[in-house]
Length: 125
Image 1 (tube, rainbow, N blue to C red):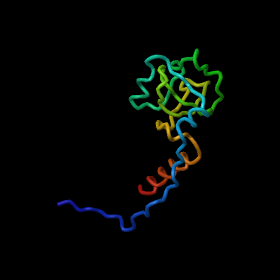
Image 2 (cartoon, helix red, strand yellow):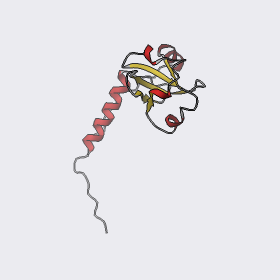
Image 3 (tube, one colour):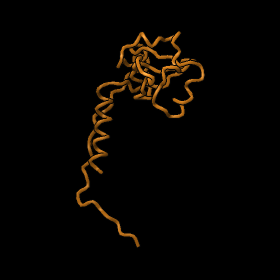
Image 4 (cartoon, helix red, strand yellow):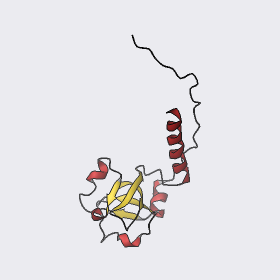
């Protein structure tokens, strides 16, 4: 027979602010695009969160046109949306995906929500 251990004071559920949703068409127009070479979207569709500089189609979207920390829309060679990311053109890992949902543009509300979720998980541990 197994004994179950119960937490005498379970943490109170946290209320999270709603994540702001923007219209995908509006978000797409405001954020520059980073286009990948043909076939280089396989890793991203498999779940990886980073883009290497040799995977970027520099003829269509030159990395030098971005400043470190710029927000971009990652798209495949066929213009299929893959995610929103921050870019660093001076690094081998030139982009890191933050959101894969076209409706969740990177912004203060998304980052605050993610930090609160992480804090909540740490408090439970």
